[in-house]
Picture (spheres, rainbow, N blue to C red):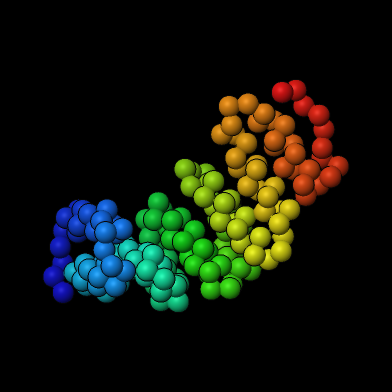
Length: 173
């Protein structure tokens, strides 16, 4: 293992992700393994990137273990949230939607950032897998409503009414 500077290493990781679609899945994974091997064994960022590579190449079981390891070692806050979302998505794909919901519900209590709607979207997918479609739709529409040019309040109220029929009230357009 050679320890590359963090900035140089991350640049090469980013460059590899940039060509993801042009590589065979196994070739991509092999290249990411080589990059991760340049970092110390307990480097949480390298483990996160390796987990993401496994996840993106349909190796979810391996990805889940690597995400957990990266999270346990302590990722920087921006990557911690991404790792949590990605782990929850992976768990959902592995048939563990309840575990995904638990992770994402906890993540809703984290400080707000640009990934809030991603947390909600993956929570909605997980709830749907559990047969809780109305709750999932309510979450998805609530997340969408602030992004609309009009009808924000109406859509927000309709979304809430999906899970609480007594919430409905008419609102001005």
